Length: 84
Image (cartoon, rainbow, N blue to C red; front, side, top):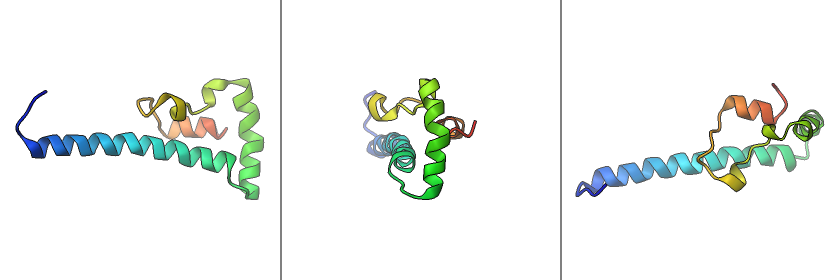
């Protein structure tokens, strides 16, 4: 939509930017915790979550390859970590 209201356009762009990168940051934080954290609690998390992911690939967060238009929420994150 064409508009001469530059403030509204900039606000709209900023909101979409924040949503877009917010999803990406949430997903990469989850991947970092799952795959790069060397702590004992992360080892326990992997021991619980990875076998569940191997049995059901829908538990995997696919935002890295599919982009930020996929939903991400607490329920999906808990499933990824094998907490549900």
